[in-house]
Amino acid sequence: MDVRSRNWINVRAMSKLLTSTALIGLLFAVRLDAHDFWLTATREATGFKISGLVGEKFPVPDSRTAVDRVESWRVVGPSGDLGLPRNLFQDGEYLATRVALPAPGLYLGMMTIFERDIEMKGAEFTEYLRDEGLDQVIAERARLGQTDATARERYARYSKIVLSTGPGSSAHLTRAAGMKAEFVPSVNPAAVKPGDSIAVQLLIEGKPVCSCLIPFAQVENAHVVTIEGLGDDHPLQHLFMSEVGAQCGICTPGMIMAAMSLGADPTRTQMREALAGNLCRCTGYEAIYRAIGAEKRANRRTPLGVESVG
Image 1 (cartoon, rainbow, N blue to C red):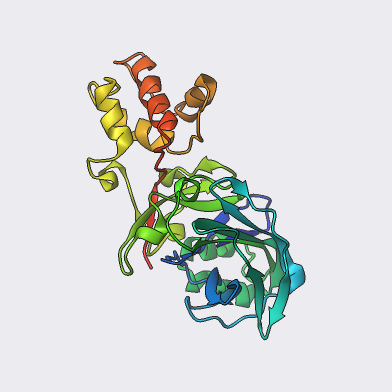
Image 2: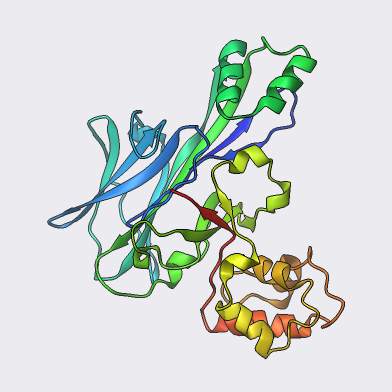
């Protein structure tokens, strides 16, 4: 995943752009014709070799990432962070590390690459914007007489990988991991068959991103999931019905999707804050809070929001 902010028109208004992410094991990616960053795993006698790859056209790597560019690397299991050493090394052109896992089960590896600034001359930046379909930015720079002006871009990279060494709890795979930008899958990715789609929720600094506030060009080739993407068998949907949290139904889709961002055992204040953008005039909210609380206590939270298409 690249998160990029662009000085498109030489003013301080910056826009973050999500270009890609990968959960490998069963992997997926969202791409907007910028460099993708993803992790792959190779089984070895004593564990896994994890490779960090960058490429213009996923899944073909074509760029080098140095060890000193890595901000963090950690592995989380059902009981929390394993506290493993980084053990990063340069594997030819690619970044790599080796991991020995303590017991059979499912684990989540997470890597973050430091923010970096790059500069592009006006003509180069215009071509870059054109490749990404951002003609409105090209037009705005032209209107302000800045077509030939040098542009700066700041980006960071984030990626996750699921490591499976046998059956085990997958609850930690479907919870937010605390990355600045991340996709949180709706189900255990290791249980999804190759070729199938998987729904995820996009979080920026721990908060779900409102799809209506994201520029259309930033979700090119992605499939945005609304309440219909849940089908009719999500645990939270059932609890909204059994706790009478849904009456007229107008606010229910937004309530359910917003509740996906809550962690385990949220307080009433946290529930209120998460649902602040959704107004209900039927239930008085108490039934909604009961439904959300019951689902969290059952540890069946299934976050989602944006379905990525590989």
